Image 1 (tube, rainbow, N blue to C red):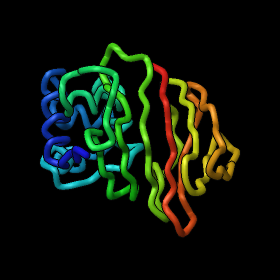
Image 2: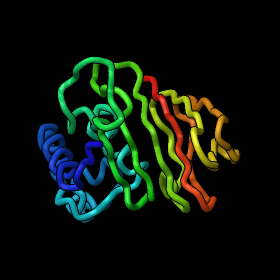
Image 3: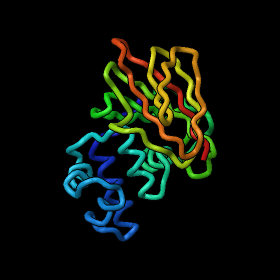
Image 4: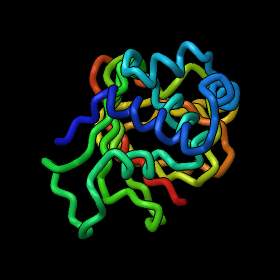
Length: 185
């Protein structure tokens, strides 16, 4: 498992922001985060939530999968060994995100495995993504808020989340939960 360090994530955010010609303050405004938070992110001092990482990637003009690709190795074949997966830890979300396939701009599918520890959640509030997602609960039990509705999903249950649909994942159980999410670019 290749664990991404917070500093590597911060360095990438800074590099992509600077490539876009944005000041830290201007970028903070686009993401709706404080300049202080963006500064702490870029220096590796904070661990953002899953939702925050998605917002930051979107503001940088990339998907979460492309963000992984920028931090990982160059694209190779289609086989990704479990020991070679790129992993991103979000202490805020009490979650780990693993890239299950090669994540590059040329890919239409972005398969991720999200592990939510007890009490973990994707963010503070439901958010919408600009792409369709399919989710399959591999292990445990999670709550999925879709718009105004809340659904308890157990191992074996699945959901399709439409583009622009508000969603929030949470794990209120006493055991970890794992959700396979495949986003379509």
